[in-house]
Image 1 (spheres, rainbow, N blue to C red):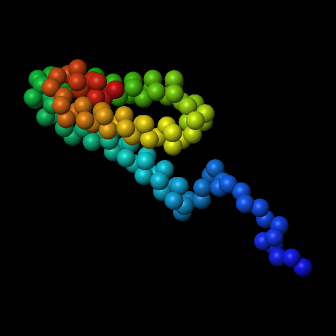
Image 2: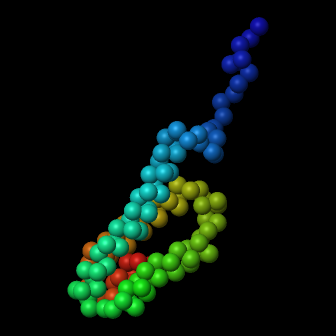
Image 3: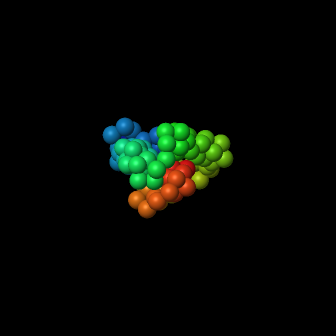
Length: 118
């Protein structure tokens, strides 16, 4: 009698990793980093508003640009993770988010704020 192990063959990991796996932890961490990068500048807007001298309408538009950027990305790039893989999309997304955060550091005008938020 053979053991049950003899009949098994090595297969690649399932595309749906179990919740406790390293892959799930990595993916979760990536999402947290992206959302943190997106939310970090929000408490600084009143300071930008005073230093760059713009009103409440412009501040609202700076927030709205972020939504517009997400909409554009979802419409044109929404299927990209299915075609090239989630990791291949997530890592550049983190990089772009970090670039946007860096633009906030040097923002000296409303145009920089729009560019950083988009």
